[in-house]
Amino acid sequence: MARRKRRGVSLGTYVLTVLCMLTLFAGVIMYTRISGDIDLISISPKMLSEPTEMIRHSLMDAQTHPPTESARTENATADGSQVRTLSIAAAGQITVGNDMRRSARVDGGYDFASLFEPVSHAIMDADLSVATLRTLVTDESSRYDTYFAPMELVGGMKANGFKLFNLATDRILDGGVQGIEKTRAILQSAQVATAGAYLSAEERNALPIKEIGGVWVGVLSYTESVSSNGRRTVNEETMQQSVRMLNLEWAKADIAMLREKGAEVIIVLAHWGSQSDANATKATRETADALIAAGADIILGTNPTQVHDIERRTVQNADGSTSDVFVAYSLGNFLVDDTRESARITGMILRLSLAYDRQARSLSIQDAWYMPTWIMRWQDRGGQNRYRVIPAGLSSPPADMTGTIHGNMNKSFQNLVAKLNASAARPAAE
Image (tube, rainbow, N blue to C red):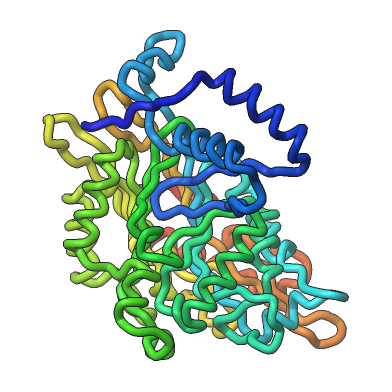
């Protein structure tokens, strides 16, 4: 497997030079880039002098290119182990309708942080935590609707541990290229990572990788469809450069490119199937099989509004070694306000603990568990609906929940546990 070599002066020289430049350019914020499709914050080159820009690119290069084999050997643990670990938390999709916006309204803005706080303990400590925004975000209140959420949504999610926002859904082009630009700018200002929406063909094709939790990770994000509204906003060429469509031949080439760059773990975020699918379809399962055969390690699905099955497999690598793979066909709804159907307000947070053995070039799943979630709704004294995402397996009803609703929630928890593959992951009540 080809490895890129790091070139340039020593790290100490970088540090000394950066300190000098910081003295001249106080307040300059250095940034990094994150893996796969992931797009982290950036600063404009216009803010910096040419020497500082050169240093920035050199540092970024060191962070996004994997180390050589010799460097990896030098960085082995004290006992000589080449095993590195990575923890992942993944939740489903989010939309923010009118009722939920009213619920989150506070003086001068919106408070979304409290909506996620009851489940933040399942997210906070993960090396990589991801949720799918089936909405754009904007600071223009005149545009708020089901697929344009207030910008405060991002800060509320970040405050509860989310680090990566997947944008590749059927709604990504509802606001045209301008909607992507606005959403990306807000996310970058919040210093969170994004996947699945691009501002140029060059950016879409970049496929950088990032070391997360000690493992070199590549993330690919695809959508199987774009809404009719979205298709009307752009031509075919612009659509292709703005989002990755789920085409297996393209996906295979993307996965091969990430492996060529040194990705040790490849995560695929797939917005596929139909919203009404109660279970993974034959077509979706065949797509997952093809992605795994091409080299995908973790597949996290969204779009269906219900949670679908999960699978844990062992596959044989080309060199005869084996690796574990994991598929979540649909993580379901994480936060919506357009339904009270139990199956559609019961979601899940998936937790995976991975270990990658660099010597054997093999991935193993050390632990896998999930926490079913429930979108709680109640009325305050003024008659306004309020929302929270809570663990679905709570033994006692939280404040403002009736005994009847608590019983419905527990039944939904039990139904979901019965539906999911017990050999793939264990359930956690709260």
